[in-house]
Length: 125
Image (tube, rainbow, N blue to C red):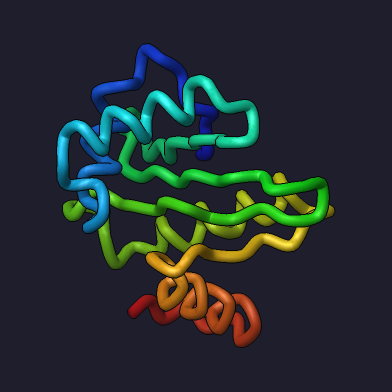
């Protein structure tokens, strides 16, 4: 289930974001979290499986018609289970009136999700 980020989940969010290659540096990670907390156009969501937050997805709303997926990460213990694809699908439902597109860091994953959605293929690569 997708949940909006709350300050109470800051450490969990930072841990999940730290799996992103461009978020390894602690200062950079703290700046990113601060931006999500302070900028109304930046939205962060956590994915919960049973009782644990296992994934995170961050969106920048550029306008009413464009939303960019900036971050997406899944705890390594939960990878290859389709969680990233589920998060992408939910974000597309939330931003249904906008074009949801990836930034350059997650473009290849986004394309895999698009192929999966078009073919309905349940194989998760």
